[in-house]
Image 1 (cartoon, rainbow, N blue to C red):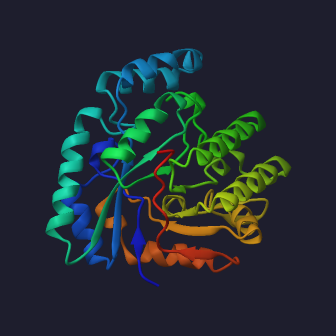
Image 2 (image 1 turned 180 degrees about the vertical axis):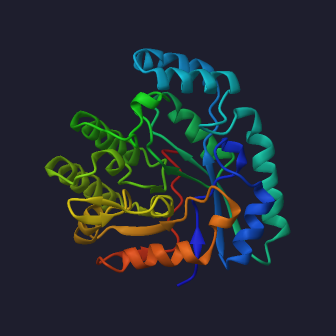
Length: 292
């Protein structure tokens, strides 16, 4: 199987290290044939967007602290600063030309389902980027209290996550669904609600022929004990058993946040995890272009 990775971050998102050149060099050394950059999408008018979510963090000291930090720095820590978008895209474009004989490079972004930014996402696809991947971390606003990957999530939040994901996939803006089982960090035990939303997500992705991602970032977290068994928070064995049953296409995403994470070992670990289920692994996918 050829090695590809379309889930890659740079230092520009504020919680990763390595610039575009270092990432490409590491990917070439790891014999990756196709590399996609997918930093957390820079958003215009980001400070105003944060303020709209102020009500949702009013009772959360941690949320207020995070919101204040991101307001001051205008993105970094959570996503790329909007002012950095042009230089990032220029760098990727130049690397694509310079290394065309060694590796195929694509420009993408990882984005949430934010209804106020859907037109902006369409503009990006029309003019600047090859693809978007759906990494649905937040519900409506960029605040830690609305984070779907937090330590505790309730059933209402799970239904909200599922609803957001389905609406996002139906826009045709997103080429695949990153870490679809992110919610298992806080859900921990795969109960009837987790099973219900998993079937809904897998069936919608199957209907639309949109791949689901086995995420290397979850594997790097290591395993934890749940009801006497050691499991990754994500990728979830329960989630991907259902994905195998439904017949979803599966993409492997390293979710690299440093050049040295683009290595052979993590790829082998993702393949080992996938081998436990009847999964159809794909190494590329259709670049969705929205409603144009």
